[in-house]
Amino acid sequence: MKKQLEKNRQKKKEDKAQRKQERKENGTGADDIAYVDEFGNLTSTPPTQKQKSADEDQ
Image 1 (cartoon, rainbow, N blue to C red):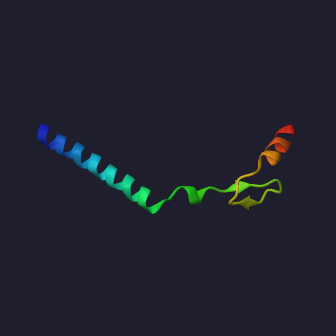
Image 2: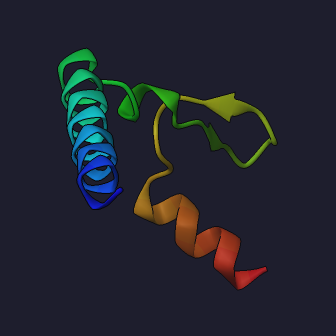
Image 3: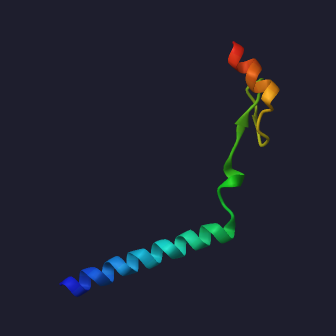
């Protein structure tokens, strides 16, 4: 029973490392970010500092 549990833990650890490596190779994550501009439209570029300070004043 103890050997089987250890095998299961090791398999989970290897699977997790493999998934992490696949995500790293595919480069997913950064492309999924969307920003909202001052007009309420979605854009792929982040707002500038000037726009941020104007939004905070309101």
